[in-house]
Image (tube, rainbow, N blue to C red; front, side, top):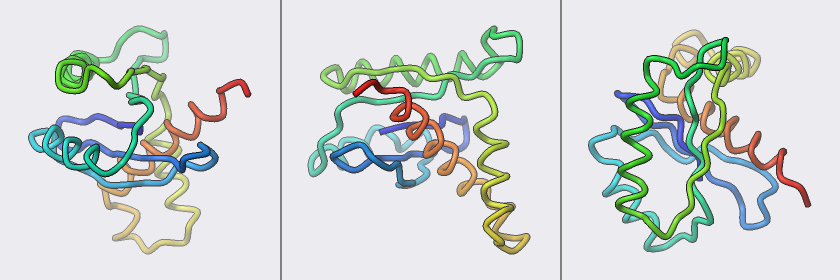
Length: 134
């Protein structure tokens, strides 16, 4: 399960049991993420959490990194049995926007920030899966 964390929305993506393809799951307000995950984990197995790590072009943490650090702390405290990995999220929002634009979606659909956040989480998760060594 991957998260594109934002202070207004968290994009969430999951993968199939064989970890072949990432799929957008939802966007959730940070206030509701713990309840959402508790409900989800009652019925679904999650091997690990992948969290987007916000960085600047010079590889230093971006301004939003402090918020992501708090989110990761919350995940560790609430779900200690689920390992967490951080993954560089630079360009995921731009890639998500480009993907949406190429899809032929109308202007209103392309401006849907929830969709951008979900697709950013999908890109994070797919990137993590592509890096795994089999």
